[in-house]
Amino acid sequence: MSEPVLQVEGLRKAFGGVIAVDTVSFEVAAGRLFAIIGPNGAGKSTCFNMVGGQLLPDAGRVQLAGQDITGLPPRRIWRLGVGRTFQVAATFTAMTVVENVQMAFISHRRRLRALLPTARKLYRAEAMAVLERVGMADQAERQCGLLAYGDIKRVELAIALAHEPRLLLMDEPTAGMAPKERIALMALTADIVRERGISVLFTEHDMDVVFAHADTLLVLDRGRTVATGTPDAVRDNAEVQRIYLGG
Ligand code: ADP
Ligand code: MG
Image (cartoon, helix red, strand yellow):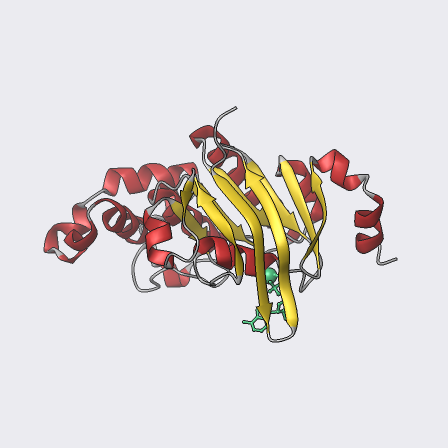
């Protein structure tokens, strides 16, 4: 067994009197898709934000491939190989699709060189290859601001991949998309991360999508762990059924 990419131990966060995440522990194995599910307010986003560094835990520890990253600023965590896709569009709307992905490559590999006038030509081939993979090569020269919502999501995936993450955090990556589109985007994401050996921590409303793609699930309810395990084990859990059937 190889070392887990992500190890979360006893993570806890309260907002005033509300315990948003109550002593939660889990591990994401290398190259696996791990889903956190649970009703609204269960503490999913709070967990993501503590892993990504946007929120400081009250207690507990987050380790990335054995390195303690608890409380590091988001930028440091990102530099260590933790990518994120965001619910709000994070593309530069005045730039073209391919320029956005080139910028991501530049910032990942060259950092300050992005300011050079030659930046426009850098990493174009790499950017086009990623766009090809996410099905956006034919729209490479379009301005991002003119894209359909589902296509922006594909560009965001391409941008996340340009950062060559070892762990990708996806908090409701398909939010706001039509059911057919979200199934297609999640299937594409799962295919790509599996072929590249990227680990994923994600959450998603559509349970069919979660059960189809997650290797392991963690079910939260009001900050507490209700169940954890394979999709089959979680599906058969009586407490999970009670929560999801609203009993
Ligand atoms: P989920 O993503 O599962 O819907 P969240 O992690 O967003 O849940 O929220 C968990 C709980 O913490 C909820 O009760 C929510 O109202 C509360 N909460 C989340 N973020 C904040 C915040 N910044 N300030 C106060 N309360 C918050
Ligand atoms: Mg949330």
